[in-house]
Image (cartoon, rainbow, N blue to C red; front, side):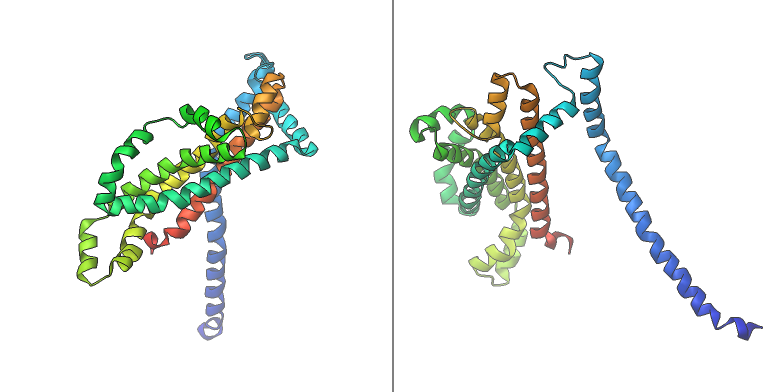
Amino acid sequence: MADTLTPHAPARAAQARSYGDTGRPPRRAAGRLGTAAKRSLAVVLLLALWEALPRTGVVDRVFLPPLSEDLAAGYDLLRGGELLDHVGASLGRSLAGFALAIAAAIPLGLLIGWYKPVADFLSPVLELFRNTSPVALLPVFTLILGIGETSKIAFVFYACSWPILLNTVSGVKTVDALLVKSARSMGLSPVRLFQKVLFPAAVPAIFTGVRLAGAYSILVLLFAEMVGAKAGLGYLINAAQSNFRIQDMYAGIITISLIGLLFNQLLVLLERRFSTWRTT
């Protein structure tokens, strides 16, 4: 009897393993869905209040229309092509200034953080400008560069440079000194030391500055587009408010929030890509 049952044992074991393997992914997926639901609960409640409070008369729906009406207005703007034109104008300016800030601030921050003479020479100027609000300098940019695209891109570039620069300097200065000494004792040249030790250790701080700058690139641009612009989300919001098109105004605000959220998630993915060494 035992001999007749024995050949079926491997099959039953394989079947049990198959059930176990197929059971794990659904449990993992359910766990992830539960975590996502918990994290999004506050947002769902906020959107529900946005819809309910104006409809129940708790707040004046003239000044805060229900969310559904704002989304409908955004859809009408999107269908007519107006929203895409404004988004394209804003993204072009924002990304141009943001890219220029990355290209200039990261090398300068690495230089300041690594070479003390450069830091001693530039620190007074950096301290002066880092404490000056970019918004306060908007009239200066407008007077010198006019109201065209150049002033808006330069304004975004200026605002984005500071978080990237300061976080890069901080990241370089906080590299473990013992790690640097160990690398030098192994005979690494300055270039290899920078490539293998300094820059990888500073990447998390650099990306913190880049993510902050990504948010600034959109926020400060709104101020610039409210002054002398003919297109852009800032212009859309300002023009809608002036003409009392309140739903269109909120549609522009929602669009900015979504763009900022997507931009931040993209930067998070890039940070994980360039920081894989931290988990390996």
